[in-house]
Length: 319
Length: 314
Image (cartoon, rainbow over all chains, first blue to last red; front, side, top):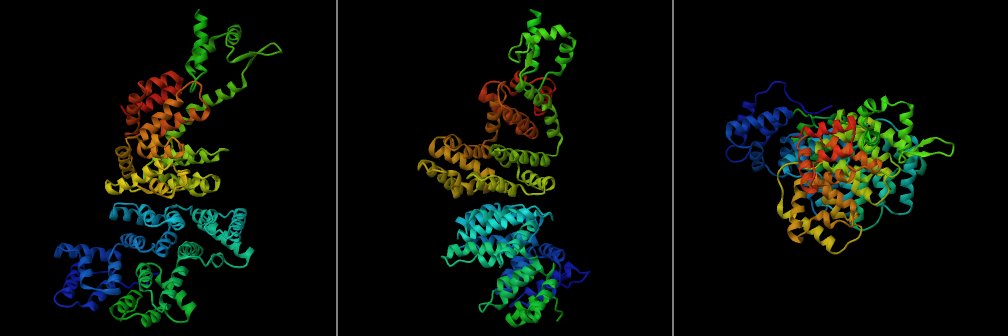
């Protein structure tokens, strides 16, 4: 269930005019921008962008980029792009990050989305950057991490509900043996995790838990140098994304992001902006169940200014 | 004299690709018991004198003939099927063999468009309740596995943009790897990365830069690693690859898998410009036309079917 509140009827011309007014002159009327854009769905925002361009001969997104700043600007920029464009940009930024790609975002997107949704994003990526996401990803990563990430992004998993119980057991054993022999980059673990269907993999992970006492992610930890950690971290993230349904996963992401003493605004933005028209309501419920405090309250406490106001609007707050 | 000709004709009808159904009807069907006996006695290549006094048909040949009678059926079914279903079945069959056919997997993964390869992967889900990726990863344990899974998972950019400087520097990766005499190139991360993620136009640019730098063609220099050689050919010069397969398979005494390739290559490349380019390449490289070769080696309805298919691109 979405949290976004938007009117059924609206006038893109009125909106474009109001936005223009909010941006004109010295300073920007952020409250006005939030009041409009924070209450429009994707189709409406697209229309506004088109109308604004026709009326004022400039790209609304570029205008907003220049008028706003900080976390607020990033959030609004993400919000204004088409969902698949947004994801393509997100992937590109994640891939280019130094010293290593932001594998969390990349894996999240690839595993949480259905194969069809991911395909739409890949096409948007190709249209925008004139290269495939796989080739950019491969070029900007190395070693075991590269192999894992390219597989996670590239592989078109079977999405059926069948479970082969015998296979689940035998592959749980294979994983166990690989871990016991301390070879975490063991090809078999990567093969199983990146190629099996989600349903099959969940069965395998359950078998693992039943047979060996704790979940696989707990056993995939190692005190090695940073590179080894990145690969293991990516492997754990992949497992979490597959094992949990999307909303549970996102609740965890936003809970952690709001907890960190350095606060991870990028993750907060990512979750709220991309799920507001999707299932943010469900995520809110899960958050409350888990933390006994509403997500709105947590966001309110841990963010400030226009950024906070924007997020709360997307979360369904009416003030 | 006339008999000798008739016998030779019938023997031809039983040799090569497919069988000459019309000849069976017009000639064989009219022979009485004595004439057929005479044929058997004059054709020691097919019939051996058994110790119990009868001319026994060679077992292998009977098995072979079973395949030949079915050859048209296989071609027709493959041709009628949706290309995605067809490729899904091609992948599956290649994997089911006791020794999986890597070359068929590479051919299908590298010569289809991005959308058609993706479609084949979807069709595979429907037909076999698994992904191609998981089946390849599970069934192939040799070093080629990583490359094969990567090739089959690709969704290459198909637009016109190529970064020529990048292509040049990636050509150097090949130049250096081959110059240093590196072993196990098939597991070299950079080579796998380039071959499995770059767009085909980009790879063709690499191919020409390689020629500029070394004076040789990349696939020729890869004689030491036949798998990589095939991958490069399929991606960069597919017509050469397909012509090679055809000239090697359109012969009278080749094995079943070579014969199957004839159907597979001609039926899967029947449309678009592919067949036209293959025919041109074939003629310029081997001095004879594809049509002539098929006439020489194939029989009956199977032959007619192939000729009709390839004539479409004239």
